[in-house]
Length: 204
Image 1 (cartoon, one colour):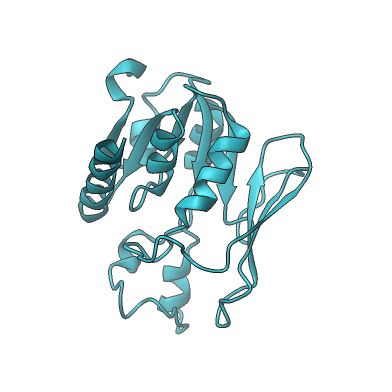
Image 2 (spheres, rainbow, N blue to C red):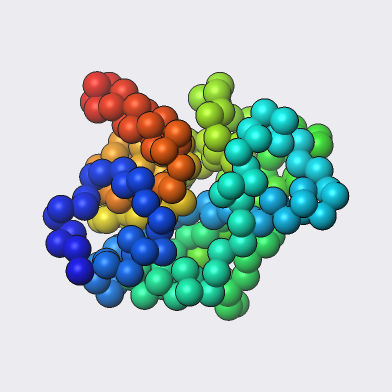
């Protein structure tokens, strides 16, 4: 098993399933993640995805998450916020998060996050990415991830994102005074996440 202090506040280039197997039970306060939705299967089956032309590596990582991986996610963490509720539902939840994005005419009007919390459902309005750039096809706005971290964890809590992508969850955690662990399998996105965190360190 990993010693938590050895892996905290770092971005790890790894397969998240194998990495999580070495994390002790319930040692993570909160997992905040936006996992792959399995859209690569849709493309293989003759469907389309509007970002495919720009992000042609999506077929490598946009796969459906296995049951074994979900078991590890729930084993190592106390609470979870999992975006993609449109695709993944685990058990009834009173506290769904809704990201309403009315100015995305070619996409869904909203995205859903399943949570483990016994709180009221909340709606977050953000019609665009206020940071003005997107280095990953499913990159969530920093403001959205900060909302999740700020409202569902406490200072110095340990936040894990096993599908870190371009690093937004880790940046949100760092900016809000939480510890973080980021896991990302694609080296290209690990480099982007690391750069964003270095920029965040300089800003702080």
